[in-house]
Amino acid sequence: MSVPEDFYDLTPLDKEGKPFDFHQLKGKVVMIVNVASKCGFTPQYKGLEDLNKKYQDKGLQIIGFPCNQFGRQEPGTDEEIASFCTLNYGVTFPVLKKIDVNGDNADPVYRYLKSKKAGLLGFKGIKWNFEKFLIDKNGNIERFSSMTSPEQLDGEISKLCSA
Image 1 (spheres, rainbow, N blue to C red):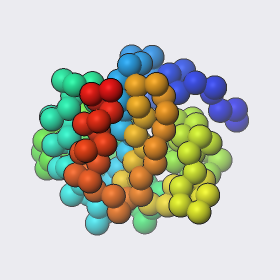
Image 2: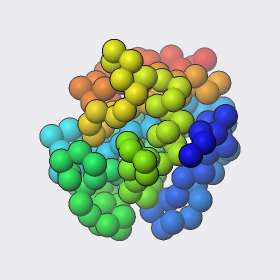
Image 3: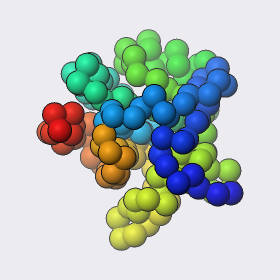
Image 4: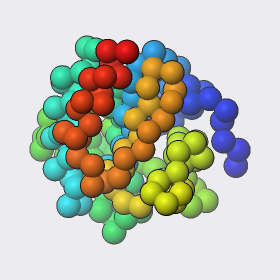
């Protein structure tokens, strides 16, 4: 499968299976996170929502991509996942359709991101839930491990939103 040339040409599916056109993200700072409801990192939803509330009016768009590839920690349906995020963490940012982030069936969004920004020691794959990609207003990509909490990215997001 080919990888699109431009981040903004991507169109993943939302939780209802409708296209979520990335063209609407042009000029924004975007954080993409592979999420899971039954993971040790799941409490990061709170930090992500805090960042969302703090910076959404300044141009930040957070997008969660549920994934069940790591320890089967996201077993629910798209509806169950959305309900969990809202009820437990008050999530208001988009949590799209459950996808694969690695392997032959990896979603094009993750094929694109991994092709543009390798992880630690050049590793291209996603290692675990809650890995984060931060895309600036010009489409430049930074990558952060699951160990990087949302709170640790506050300063970087503030800088990018002010640029």
